[in-house]
Length: 152
Image (cartoon, rainbow, N blue to C red; front, side, top):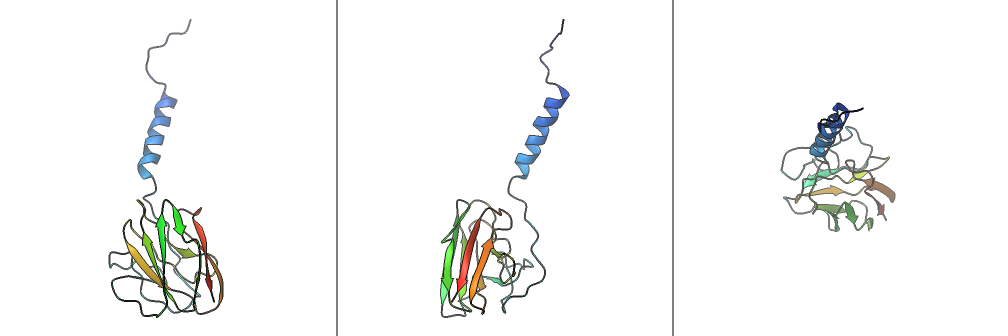
């Protein structure tokens, strides 16, 4: 006859502890940003707090845009809006994080632009590449978040 004492097994306790650690980690970690680029000239990077983020092609939005063509992308509910965007070469693109967690907007492949980490409620800008064509992008922290910037 097997006797139960009402205490959880060691395996169950370990599983609960692991789940608690993973839940605490959540989406608050940030992925490293690439350190080299092959894109167009860009401004110094910022994470929206004025401190350099080590990213390329981005700057905080504390100053006025240097380009006559400005476009905005919003991040909300883990989605880019719009997720397909057409801009002129060298246009200033402003990215506003209206979500509850940190995100990035980073070109895939060419590494032509990267906002670095954008904290909730913060804004970053980057300069669109000078070379016409499609530039797929993603959030490096939540890689299911994707979009395309087309330069025409």
